[in-house]
Image (cartoon, rainbow, N blue to C red; front, side, top):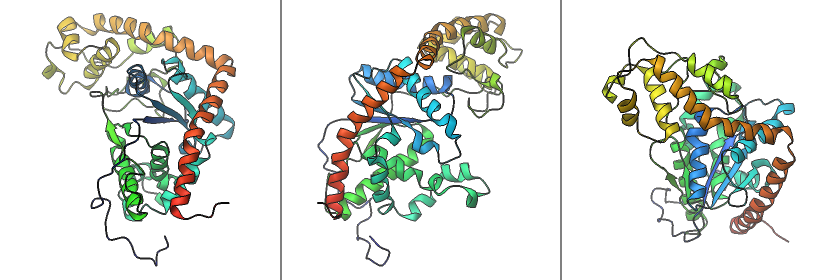
Amino acid sequence: MSDDQPTPAQSPEQAPVSAYTGPRRVLSGIQASGALHLGNYLGALKRFTTLQDAGAPCFLFVADMHAITVWQDPALLTAQTREIAAAYLASGLDPAKSVIFPQSAVRAHADLAWIFNCVARLGWLDRMTQFKEKSGKHKERASVGLYTYPVLQAADILLYKATEVPTGEDQKQHLELTRDIAAKFNNDFGAPGFFPLPEPLTQGPAPRVMSLRDGSAKMSKSDASDQSRINLTDDADTIAAKIRKARTDAEPLPETLDGLNDRAEARNLVTLYAALADISREDVLAQFGGQGFGAFKPALADLAVASMAPVTAEMRRLMSDTTEIDRVLKDGAERAAAIADPVVAEVKKIVGFWQA
């Protein structure tokens, strides 16, 4: 649709509610932009495995196309893609049950993203807060891809007609954009119900894992200090040492949650213990309240090692010989394309593109 054509009268908000009646599908992806850490495991990987084991049909991709919206060393990108795939497998995802694939290996992602670039409105993208945060004061130096990647994200989701998307707080705005694009496409082209309006999928509050050096900052792979995070490739001794050195205060643990107010580092370690043990923070304090960190840290270290060492060992095994990873990714890409390609073909027909 060119700029001199009239815009349909209905906005996405006014368009009829989607009548989509297709199958349930869950989709998510992780960027291939560097090492994963404990926050990724607890906030994403562990949740994906829970969904899979509950019978949800899951499509899980390695977002290498999203990764290059900022500079990636080409010599490392392939290795980073394999590492994300290894993390999926080591965390318990079964390629016989879930479709695991690299985003760039399915050409339909790029095809649908271009069509959606012509459906989405500039005003919608101007409201995306993540671009403002990531580009900072020099947005004119940011790549066009960084600006438009929420449209690619919409294509990722709708290409498989995903009905549910595990969504963190930082991605809710992008899912709303996806719903707007789906509604506008269905409305503009007279195809009600062609694309679903995907819903955010929550499984209770995901643990917000903070830095081991600063309890007010999220655990991040971009932190200059490796002591701030537990990497999924850290061995048992490294995991235990990082927890022993984690920043704390001089007070004993409180007996109630209110006592963790204004104690960011203590709250973070209690949250970690609760997430790893799959219990509530109240249960942690019932067990350790009144005790000092001299007693709590060794218990947390033992729990973290017991929980993460099997994941670390399996990742190291997979990365030592990538034959298995490559087989899973190739098979997953073929299975994903078998679903995605017919969707794009139908979209092109709906749009009016010439077809032989």
